[in-house]
Length: 420
Ligand code: HAM
Image (cartoon, rainbow, N blue to C red; front, side, top):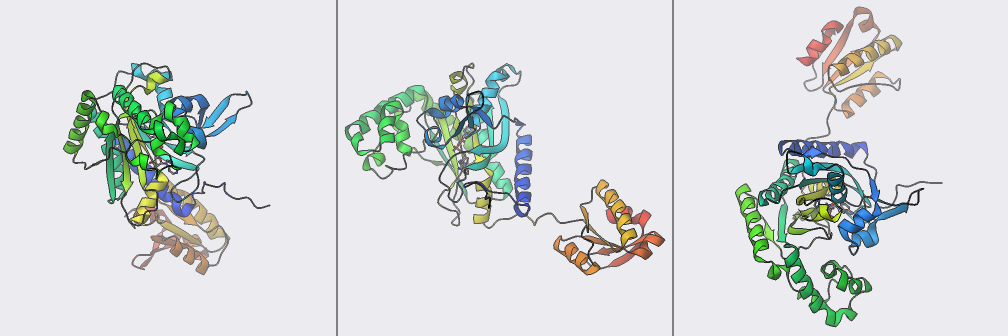
């Protein structure tokens, strides 16, 4: 029987995993300077958490969740996203009581959605996300957006654009909702059954229906922009003002509604504009979610955040034909010839590694030529050759692979010589 990696998932092999580590380092150092601290939550949560927050009528909850009964007959779900769990933890751990507000958190980890597999769309993918909870200062909206843009910049991407919208507050959204119902009701029979169900429950979700995308009523649907009340518009203006101050360009798109229910006010996405990028161009999505903490039984704690998948970031780098300097090379490769040299080499290897040098030796009992080939493939900066003579005289042959120079060095001086 042949086993295969499950559909929609992938193995991250060593030829690529070093790139993931680079991204993770960038993420950590950017979060560090923005003073966001890491949070790690479980990979599964009670199903109801996602139903209540992401929303019953969303595609994620209706079609994409990996939900199962555990042995205690509780309904559990592999997390399809990170915000719900982070806000759950914020409430459960009473982070609203922390002296320093807002609480600024970030996470990196696998998320699960049962989606149709295509380029850039996986069933298990890794999101890096941040959540700033406890403030409704529009400056923090700009900070969060700036942080996301900084990560892409630090990764070397330049073909990206920020799309921005405001979904308004509760009152604005209610007015828009009524307008949507009035707009779709006379022709709802022409729409799919999902849309028909969404009409009363959550008409906004009709707008992201993949089946009825081309229906003429979609284009003429009432725009949120026309229903923003004064305070929502004022809030949006301030967010834009702070983005201007930060020097971040954006494109306003009143049709950007996002596919999760908890959003209000600021909503944004960052897209790749690279020609080489596939059909799915969204790299990152986020927005404000005032009211979410209350929704799950906590106190009022307005929040904003975003998430981006590492997979799509790496795809965008490929599309822009950007790459980091090559895979990290080896500092030292130890070529050993004969039993005594192997033993000595093994001892030396430990000392090199302790000194922080990325080092390797042969474990396949191969001839000198084959070992030298390995050193080449691993792009070793130095090769150390030890044979019987070297062991007897406590010396090694040290070859600088960049200029080809070879010297005899006393073993006791080897570390000093290398560290020079
Ligand atoms: P989302 O728009 O559902 O938002 O996902 C955010 C990002 O996750 C997407 O822009 C994309 O990079 C990545 N992503 C989503 N689905 C897939 C997939 N099937 N394969 C690969 N990548 C994918 C959220 O998840 C919100 N929790 C974001 C947020 C945080 N809002 C506020 N705080």
